Length: 117
Image (tube, rainbow, N blue to C red):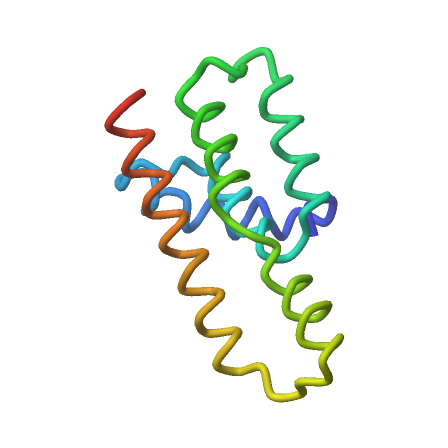
């Protein structure tokens, strides 16, 4: 998705709005990717931190690191844990998990804005 340019178009459009609330476009990619893929999100964090224009001691570096720790790979967890006990209807679990991810994103932005912004 990133190589095709779709992520850049999507993040560029929504990133203008979220940057007003303290979630820049670079960190928005992390917030969108983390529920889908833990290793992809970790790779994104590593690339943001190694970027010489951003770095680990910037607001974005602190924010993506906090997002990495305060959100979960929702779809992986649901597939593994619900699959291990043969639960087939995951709609309420999915809603609760995505709500928790949203709460983690909001809390990470609020705390990083307060401490580092």
